[in-house]
Length: 79
Image (tube, rainbow, N blue to C red; front, side, top):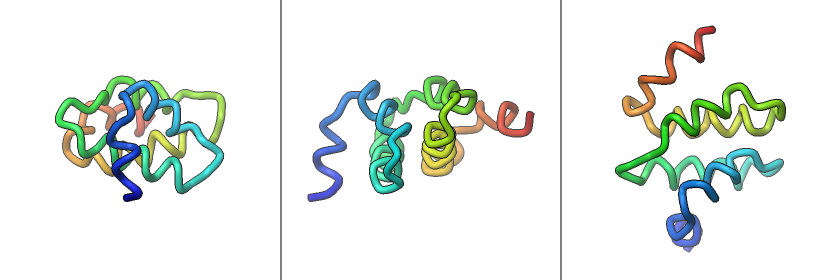
């Protein structure tokens, strides 16, 4: 099961994986965060200003997966 392992990780571990060099890891972490009822939108939003490009990509993937729940991040995305 590809998603089961990610669903068992804590929010901090998933946030860390959003910055992975691997697009597969970033995508799975983003999807796992989106499946949570208490997704850490503020922590994902902070990644938008990360120095590493991969982390910013991961943040965008997570925000896209979160859909309407990511509404607080719209402002920083436009900036």
